[in-house]
Image (cartoon, rainbow, N blue to C red; front, side, top):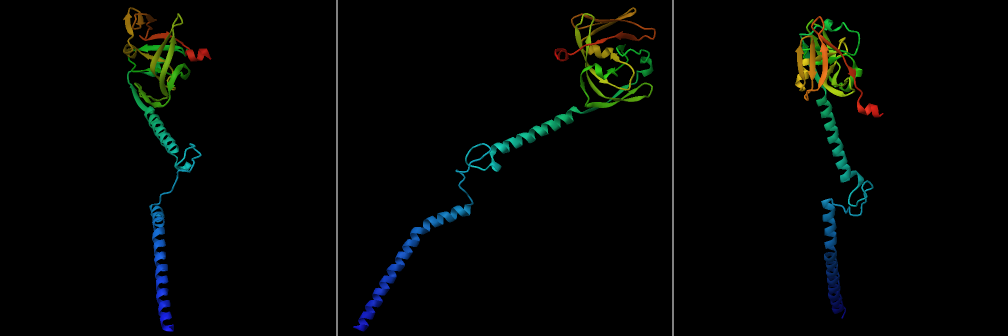
Length: 241
């Protein structure tokens, strides 16, 4: 009996132990799936961001630091800044003018600042008076050399409104601002490029616009230079203010 009991007990013990082990293995198999999935999720590094609220755009799925709208605004800012820098670089222009046919002393006899010399030997319109300009681009700089060897700086380029006797205003463009000259010069050839019709007959020079309307009639001086006093117009935007 003791022997058989021990054998039974041993058998039962083996059975119980085997069952217990079997249950343990079954439980391990039952729980190994979720654990395995969790480990794969962790390994992939992916996080559930569906409940994250961005305080920048009030949308779910990301933090404010990674907000797409923020990135888009930053990219747009840098794009605009690049365009502004390119435009500023483009707008800055350095020019060198050679006015070898002009002798500045020939145009310094008149003290009136509204006096303009009309000369076909000039290559460009020029003025010393900054206040004349209704529009002036001071990014255009450089130097101009005259026939006497003198060389002075260019302070900009712009447009001036000229007012006629009837009050009608005309815009004269492409005028260089040269602070160190002591005169105002209109290049006749440049006026023809803007469709003006110029005639020299007898003692007078006449200038008409493209519609044949008389713009000016100027007598010739003893030194064969034409001089006219022009009234500077006031831009409409200033008159409204």
